Length: 489
Image (cartoon, rainbow, N blue to C red; front, side):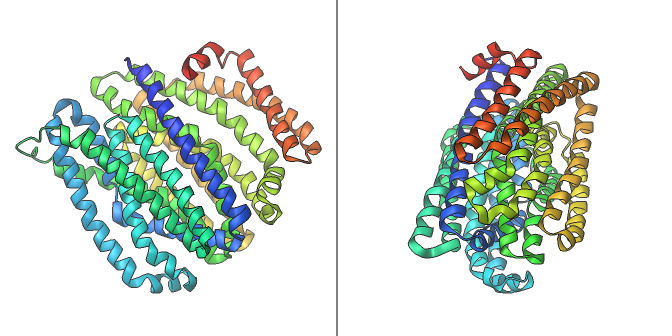
């Protein structure tokens, strides 16, 4: 199987798993928000998860991504070192989880009070279990990516999504409320961690003959490379979660629900871009090591063009139909999320580019540069959130996200350009054509949106936009129907 077919195969596996994960997440969002939890309960749940996600940084650092990079590098050159690498990371993770979990268990009440929500204490106490199982699930998934075995990695992701949905709904129905939903998350991630670690052990670790000696300095390089990855991941998590936490601190749980719901919808829209970035990124490390930069450039430019072709129109369409979509599908009590979703539509394009680019930079060995960029924009995002949320409310958090992420994307693209020498003129010309197609599509959707009065008509309006986009994309030559059929097939 050549590299391109391997990428397509991996993309299909990852996309199917992502579809299961995002589909189950969408169902969970819909069932919890529309039927099982009031906005205050929904906001309380995801505010607690936001806090725990930040705490998770201290329990994981950048070790998973670091070991994935070295697995990708050593699985061909010196596979006997891989068991040593995995053992080092697992040992470090156990130590970190023990320390962080103990601190959280002892001080969960004080932390909740310090954040202005004493009622969150039970969520933080349960968060000790959340940290352990989430760490196991994500570590196994990323390590399997390092082996470039995306089918197994996809299985772990799909299991976590389906498990969260089943158990969160079941526990809420038993009367446990938002706390029950958190325990559903814990059980889902626990099952995924068990599956992932079993696949990692039996499929890879146990099959390697461990080298008699650990390569001198390899453990040190593994830890050193995790430092910029830790900075990047910390900045990334703060960028994604601190706004949710601050909305809860400055406003109220209902505002958290509005903001979280809008961000979750953008996450669902972004699933294909994340799948593509997750799939192609290990290949960049291999191609750089082999000196095949021309091939890496071709893959990246093609992927970027396809991402822009899909997500610029999607973002514009999302902004147009945000109000009827939220009020008809979720309910009128979530109308406060409409302006947030409209602002975050711009974030969709930016994050799609980031999903394609960020992991690729890690595999190209530019984690430090990305860490600096992410750290700077994360600090700026924090400052803007503190400034805007108290003054203009929950929309201020969305504006801060879009503004700072625009800078981060620009820096990422520049770093990729310095590594691969992108054809900027061709990319700009294609992007202009995509914007023209988007403009025509937007007019078609705007003409029919005032007629929307039911879910059937809403999906009809979306279909009008999709058909208009599809016809223009084919007529412009940006989409080849034959290639689409070959990829799907």
